[in-house]
Every structure is written in structure tokens, then in C-alpha cells.
Amino acid sequence: MKPFLRTKLLCDDKTLFTHGACHIFADELATRLVPLGFVLKRLADISRCSPQQQALHVFLSRADKMVDVNGIQYVAGYVQAKRQDWLDLDGPRSNFQVLDCSQPELFKKIPSEADEERGARNKWHLLIDDDFVAECRERARALLILTPRVYGLG
Image (cartoon, rainbow, N blue to C red):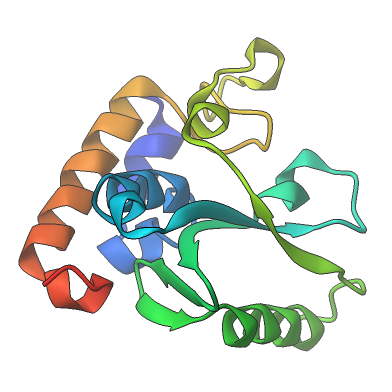
């Protein structure tokens, strides 16, 4: 595994699944929540053409609620908080929108997006190195088993 990815794995679960592996946590959560009517979603800044801006965060959503590593919250509140974070960092004006995504999109390797530091990536530059994904999945499953109620699972 690439050193960059090993370093990512040193993070606590909340940091890992909000800064680099949210798509993996969302996919593990999907196996439990899709039967309950939830769908995979991604937060995108549609005013930017950069692929990295098209999947800033991946989560599960149903109606006005979303679920990610932080638990259940309102989508609108999450998006507003992200807008404020962006403004607080003097970031460029954003046009955040919540868009659909699919499991195949999340894990389809795009050879031209791979690099020596981070390994395989998808079209949104999310990390999808096989070993990295496997380790993140183990941690996500453990977190879901340990605290199911946080995610509406029990």
C-alpha cells in the first residue's frame, strides 16, 4: 500500500470517513440502509469543473435526512454548514448541490486518474486502492456494529 494511504489509515474513524474515505463508509452503510429507502448521494460544487469538486462528500439520503459517519442529520443543515465552512476559509463562491451517485461509479478505476502517491482513483479522484478500501471497509463494519443506533440501525 502507498505510504500516503497508510498515513490516512492512522486517522481516527471520524477523520478517515470524512477526509478521504467517506465513499467507503457510505457504501458499507448502503448495504444496510438501501433496503429502507435510502440512496447514495454526493455533495458537488457544480460551479467548478474540477473532478475533485464533484464528490466533496458521499452519504446516504432519504427525503430530507442524510446519514454518514457522523450519524443522522438534515441534508439542508449539512449543506449550509459546508457553505459556511467554505466561506470561513475564504474559499471561492460555491454552488453546492446534492446529486445522485452509484456504487459502480464510486469504485470504477479510471487509469488516467491514478498516481504514484495515492494509487487508484475514480472519476472524482476518490481513493479506491484495493488494500485501502478493504481496510476501510473493516473499520466501517466495526463502527456500524459498535454503534448501530447512531446510524438508524437499531
